[in-house]
Image (cartoon, rainbow, N blue to C red; front, side, top):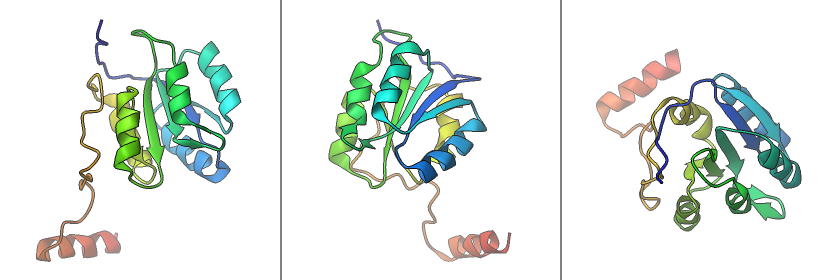
Length: 157
């Protein structure tokens, strides 16, 4: 039975990031939208995923000796399984396809703090349909004179 997509208000997020500084930044960004429980180790995150009821699993693909694909396979199956967002430092179309095939959304770390609210408050499709071979240009300046004027205005503010 396909999962019915719905926006999640007051979401409960399990954040898994091994780097303390990056975890603190993402925890702060996600706390603006939801209740966040963050972990830096795979084993503690796995135990919480087994016991807790989360709306979202937000995890770095690289978890030292493990990776996020292993956590994705440990999610409880069914309509109550948490939606997952897997992020990496660099865009990698091959890994993005693997993440999408495992039923998760793929994101770049630098975009995650800005895009996290969209994941929580929009009705998401049942899977990530974006083509990982095509970079997302939203939020980037496209060039041209008007764009340069906009860039200068942003610097003033």
